[in-house]
Image 1 (spheres, helix red, strand yellow):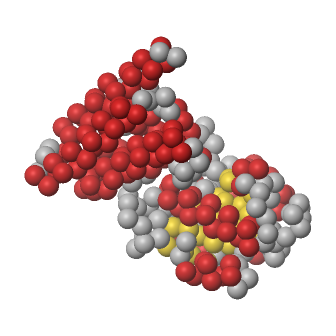
Image 2 (cartoon, rainbow, N blue to C red):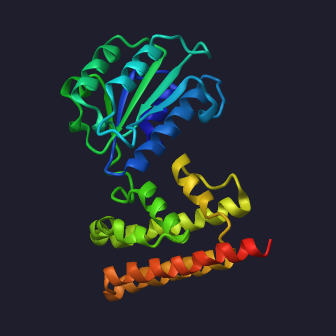
Length: 276
């Protein structure tokens, strides 16, 4: 966590509203979760976030174009209720660039009149996508200069990798655009691929040591039965490709060959099940 947030927690100088901004949606959420945990811990509340009645993540429904006004009205209603812990409530509005004008205007008054026990965190890829009136009432924390792989959407990458390993190679063709956009930061892309498979090892053999958000953990668990030998071969393949980029290896061919490779290794999930 960045120093300014640590100092605010330490000195009990928390704002009612924050904007966490970077081009990486997953990173923004990770930082918002980390900040939320630290705030609750500072108040002596050690309940896991997923079990904490005073914590909520608000996000766009997959079937909706925006974060609906109905969702925001439910949030606003909940903000008027005192926290069950008697101290603090935290709401994360994930990818808040998806707020409609109507939803944003509805939130504005609630931010202005927020009780001391309320903290709202807007995560976004662009603070200027939010209404000026909202921005002016929030402390903006930009992670642009502090994150290594701000252009790699880890959640989407994890989704694609887990689907291909699970036998759905058509998922690559459906998401070719994702990899095409990654061409200018290919090394960073493969760093995240390596992180994904290293975390799979941690999940399989060390259980609680895979430090990921809930969505990425879901995708990891989906392929948890992939044998260690397969994971090891995949990691070595990714490392080999990363080294190859220094010798101007063709990016598109390297990506496609790698994904074919992990698709084939994914067949070993079924083999390992058959042996059980």
